[in-house]
Length: 179
Image (cartoon, rainbow, N blue to C red; front, side, top):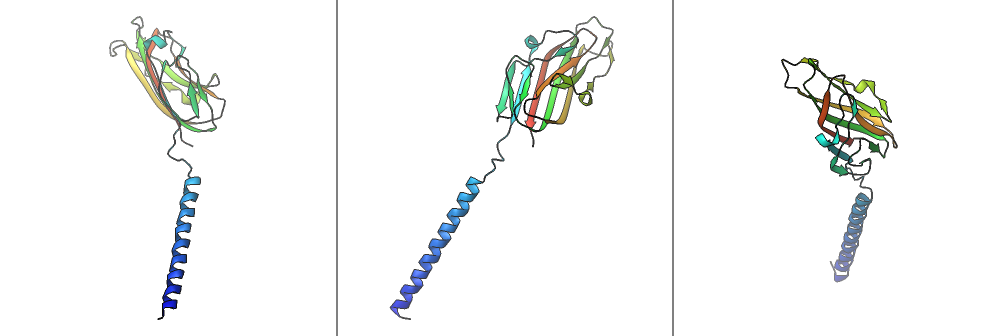
């Protein structure tokens, strides 16, 4: 092999290396540009304390504190009952609602329901057990998780239903857009 042949081989290898390097860079740029940000989540966690809800019996629950707000699909103004849906999608909604009997009832019962645009969603009705005062400490918590398809502009609320003298000192809603 002569010197010219080695020079040609080196030149070819150099060109191949450059082509591979450019190809790798193009692939990396393509991946970065087309990243669907699948790690970005749309989550809202809001809680209510005793001072947020002083109603007795039927009530729409106000949430005074937003613990987590991630993304733009959900929004909530602290101190209100309305959770605004800003993007169409499928949402997983979990809640806990504590009810306390004020001690005047011979039985203890309350229910919870989700409302969208002020309309109760009857298929989300969470019926609490009817308990007599002999077996209950005048305190009960309802929990539920549902999955709903919601549209941008919808307003989500949590309702409490009871004919007894029930107050609602603690509540929590965890909402995540899952699709």
